[in-house]
Length: 499
Image 1 (cartoon, rainbow, N blue to C red):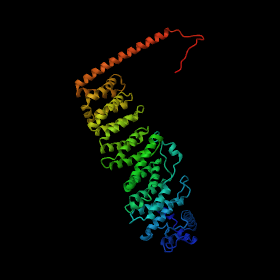
Image 2 (image 1 turned 120 degrees about the vertical axis):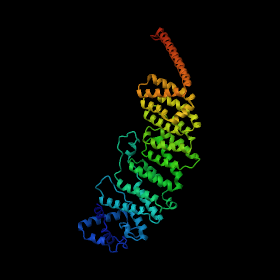
Image 3 (image 1 turned 30 degrees about the horizontal axis):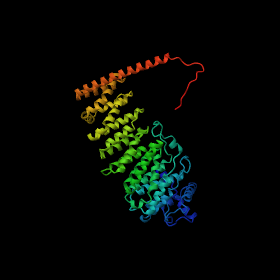
Image 4 (image 1 turned 90 degrees about the horizontal axis):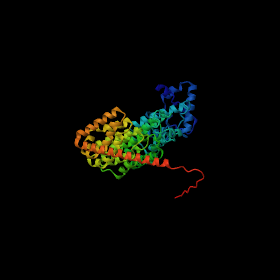
């Protein structure tokens, strides 16, 4: 297969190009080459086709066909070390031509030539040359910008509700054979020790980073994975750009939560931030706490939470591990955005609450236990059995049992009405069994307290029944009084006063 690919390289055309066009460099083409001699013996018809293709490519991409006196179609092994960087720049310029992949039969020869050149560039960058010159860095950034930075078709944004239609297949870019190689080259380039950050930061600048962040809108998951790896490496290598990257990722989150609720790359951006948070120094800066409260916690609001919930939960957990005092802040945020009509999200919220309660200290727990367990009580009585089950499963966690045990005088009065209601009216047998188990745990924990709370619960029930009867009697009295009134008929004048 490789022989077939290499045979399509228009190496023989280099000689013809050098004679046909006075702008072609001759220094590297006059040297005898046995491969060219072999190719000269091939069919004239096949040669003319390849010559014409190479000539078209050369005239379209290179007005002079040569950059710094080096023909771009030469292999790196065929030039001395002193010329390899110039050849690198020439090949980068050759790859600045972008082809239309919507028609597979169009420009097949040129596409293959560009793909082979990209592979050569990738191998060269991976080999770790001594040092990339500033013109080479500029040419690399230009080639990446030309190939990668593009506007997505309208259907990318109109049809991508980020998880609303989970059964829909993602849209794959037909140009991925070239895009993947460009992404691989950029990743190797950014991580290469031969690239000096002080020089490269002039070209991998704010504008370049913004364009990369915009590409996270891509519907192709392969592209988003490549972008995630590259952005993470840029964040690690270019310390001067770190605040800018954090700020603009925050802006993407704000726009997603409060404006569009449409973005394909939220999960990947959160994965980047997950690793960034682990590197935060202690104590946490106020900027990072603001990001938690204004960006991460509101990400629980969109209905497509399930698409990125795992990554979001990891980021939240990392913040709490860094600074345990933030646990109460996070729980208040969860209660603020708690879903009341979306049972799937409610199950997710309960799972995240359990993770937070495993790491919370007693002082922070005291700040939120009343509103939190009032909400848990509402979940216990949910008619959706998965929500009720997930809430009752909290009592299987030893850490949560310990927190409840130390604060049972506050928590039991909040939870007992929900437990009693379930034992009497809930339709699901599994929920009923779990409710009885939790009720038994409370009796074993403090039987006297349980009996006292149960007595108050029955008294409250009796008061509610009595109040209900009084309301019923009052309404019956009103209805009977209204029935005795004679309706007005005829042209009786009625005085209507306006406020």
